[in-house]
Amino acid sequence: MRPSITVGSTRTPTWALGQPYKGSVAMNETQRQVIRAFREHRVRYLVVGGQAMRSYGIDRRTQDLDLWVARDMANAQAITRFMRQVQNLPPLDRLQQPNFKFTVGHPGQPDVDILTSVAGDPQFDVYFGRSDRRLIDGLRLPVINPSDLLLVKQASAVKMEEDQHDPALEQVDRQMAQRTAEKERRDIMLLNLYINNLPAPL
Image (cartoon, rainbow, N blue to C red):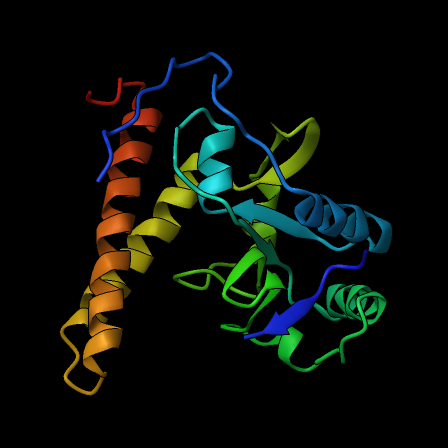
């Protein structure tokens, strides 16, 4: 079955540094289909977000797969070929612009978020050159390195904290920004501990 595209309080975990994560770093079938299609069409991408953290052994609760894609013309055309495969109109111009996201899976709870930029809008090629090949569900995938992911999380936290106090936004949007900022700050703490080779608190 082809994947469908739509545009559009727990204990702090612990990990054993230098050891594979003991929990489940797994993808569902839709996520694996997208990865296979990206390989087939030679899409350049990086795994970011929760699955990136989990690949380094940080027990971060997540179900979706966040993929940051390059915005150059060749990559936009490759993504367009992928989108045609899943019977969607390819927005080629949008794929070359920042702040565009489309999702694969159920609209309410997508399996994959495909992003043309991440917080802070860093250069994809720079981060791609520093990326690691990490094992996720038996596949070696290009994953943003922890120090770069930390920078992305810090930029996101700052933006979300600004949004939560923005009177121009609806209350529901400010509340969502607050929740996202809290999540990002928690991720920042865990990444700092990991980078500095310190154990996570119980």
